[in-house]
Picture 1: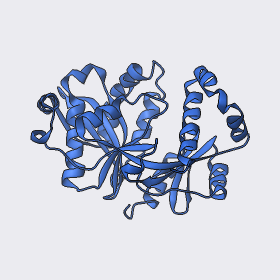
Picture 2: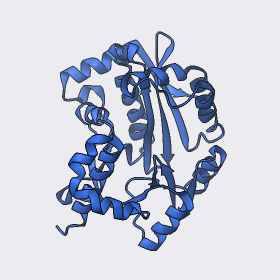
Picture 3: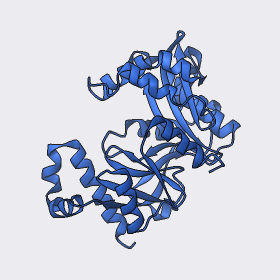
Picture 4: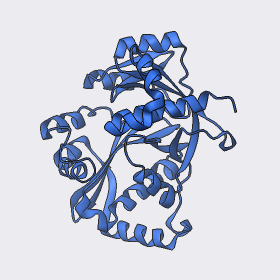
Length: 298
């Protein structure tokens, strides 16, 4: 993982006032009501029930989710990260349609590393417009709060990289990435202004980032995150189809706080009915179904 993990990331989260704790040398933090490991997806974050309970008490949340590192494709599970292990030059891209869009994107737009100041100054509009298109009209952060969040990574450019794609001199999209040494780069936050999508700036951005991390820095893999169960998988499907991303399967387990453990167990047989009432509840039932499937011996 490199010398920056976990100390530098814990410094970053302390600066941001984001709840995080160390368990057995690994970072766990709260995200959307869950406690999850923060670090390279290929690491084993398995916990004993006692350690999981202590982390839940420390951070709050309904449940704690763990993963146990990559496993052979022959041992595929229903849980996976979507990763890319090698950069593909344009001339080696199999699809002529993708090659054409890549060339147009690189001709129309410029993709490069940008500073916190550049992102804070120009990134809110793509951020807001992306949410309006894909997440409804309620943008979760005000401009001032979003700018403060971006600027909180100032001084941490060893572990947080910001990238932008500029079309006609304007920021049309961006990616904020977490860097775990030469093991993994996590494409954590990706937003694209919908008005610029036809210029294929997203193709230019992914191509250039993959070229830099996989081709130039020789990072083992880049990661777009784990399987999405709350939102659609359009972006992950796009990356698999156009940029040679693949599913890297992992083990999975979950630990629940009382009374959620009892409530989930009692209502699980009725999940198909109850899940229709709320997408977050449906996602919770789907996670539990995946966890139960993973516990069945193969």
